[in-house]
Image 1 (tube, rainbow, N blue to C red):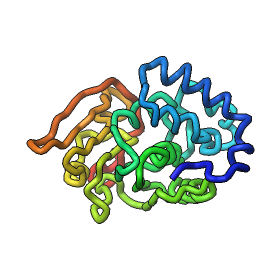
Image 2 (spheres, helix red, strand yellow):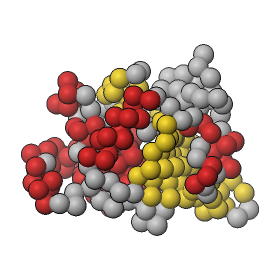
Image 3 (cartoon, rainbow, N blue to C red):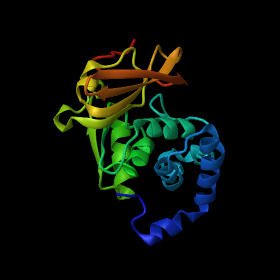
Image 4 (cartoon, rainbow, N blue to C red):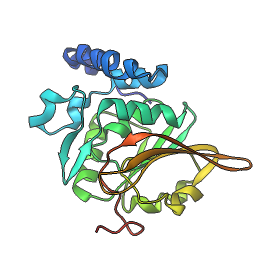
Length: 227
């Protein structure tokens, strides 16, 4: 499942291990993300490899960065926090809406049994596919398409994570969330008044919790056409 299945891969990345540890200690643990599986994943995945060359020197700093096509890679804390809120484990099947550069996808794959990720921008999909293949992930499944529609043929999911802000919770995604599963999704307007929402499907219905303010690019697709 994990990233570094071969010793030479671990050795080749040792020069960034200290940066990742500092990122986890100073940006993530200090903000009260404490799930050991999440901390291990964040300390393992080489964030710099998911960024354009000109941004790699800033890979482990406390902030989002551009990945082109008017999209961003979220700041490390947000990636860690959203992953922790999913409450997933090694048997979980997770749906990610918005593959982007593939960094959040890789973090999920370090924890979950299988990750299904949908990206609407063809160039980002192809780049993430090549990158994740090079890093030898075997439990990631990628699809080019409209993320607001989910991935119905692989549902139900134990976790659904949406990495772009929707105006409202997409019904298509709710239908694909299994009993006991959790969805984490930013809800709000374009770049403002957004809140991260956590939705859990119980035997008796849906439980919704508002977590904290966030700032994401807008979710686009048939359910959310660009304005």
